[in-house]
Length: 299
Image 1 (cartoon, rainbow, N blue to C red):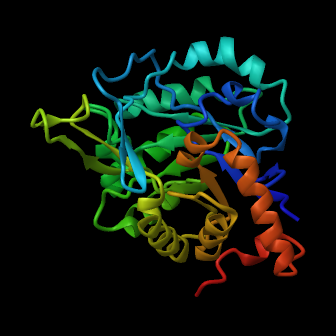
Image 2 (cartoon, rainbow, N blue to C red):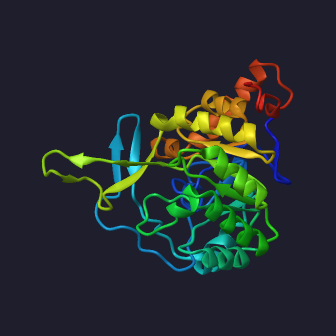
């Protein structure tokens, strides 16, 4: 009852491991069966290796956390040569999450990842924790559309564009990337936040600002998913503070065809399978044949 088809790709469930907190997936192989996960959105990739930000990178907040990891990753070529072959031994769709410092980098990465073993591209145009990073692409509909077009031009894979909540009008960006050819959208990425150490009187995070995630952002995320889903005709992946199967159902009722689980994984390494089971139990309790029956039912 959980099987889902997203942008032409069949998944065992609509519950995806969100980019960032699940590493490349292999890190969790000793805690759960990766073959049971709906899909894995791998740790954010850049064209060249990145060492990430200096100083403190994570800060716990009420009902959530701030992070400023800074997209630390080995680079796309190392991922393709060293990590993807290991991931490909599992029966789970792989979503490559990509970020670029300019539009051309997005195109280069899309071309490099247009290979067997990659099922989707998730285009991160909204990384608030990287200095001189990709936040500007996500806040401007024109720039967001430009990135979408160049990625689509360089790949045959379904393109999911990940939107930032740090905007005044999420709908205009969602509509712009759909018009530019996006096959789907995912939202929300983290909200831009800050924490100050009251003992030292200095920013707690090494990058000063960080991305806020966890249950604290869920009402904002549900609202934005609802607004975006009302405005576009492509699938929506909802994320932001999902900690239970009922949370996942809430996003689907708002219009999400699938959901991504992020911060919950840091609380429990088995969170994704636990949430998947709870979502199945919820659907059975409602007498559903397939969980997709609830998508967009909140009008």
